[in-house]
Length: 194
Image (cartoon, one colour):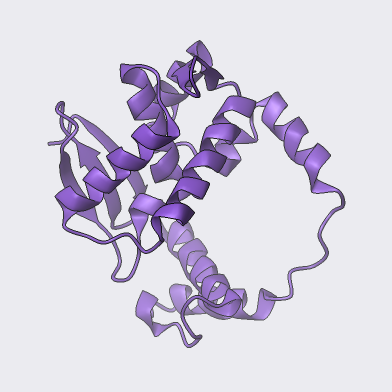
């Protein structure tokens, strides 16, 4: 049993033991849970529990997790660093991390509380609960978006999920907006079943 685990949804989990070795991974085929927002934020916060974190240290730890899992990341190292840097900034805005020295961040009391409260992981919705982060998003949003042009593919995925069709029944080309919208609909139906 992992000492520290992150549940990412049905069939999706990852766990670490007390020596930070990966213990378990479960996922859908062609899914990359280590690159999800909750997983990357969990990695950052978990590392920060032990002391100050840096972008380099987080990238190295993620690479080590991929090595332990015998998997290859779906993104380039530069894209992973960009994603990690964005999450470090988000955690600083939400005041879960604070600047330390030499480009490092340390965990705040609020960050410790977030780890204890959100055992499943911290995602964008959780960050929006912090007033500083919500204000930042509102200020940087510019204008409200219009209606989602992909509602039809979302609805198709939702109906497929309700009817019990497989996650792999997605009729859209992988890595397209319609494909992702269909997956989101399917996952919503799955969440509602539970």
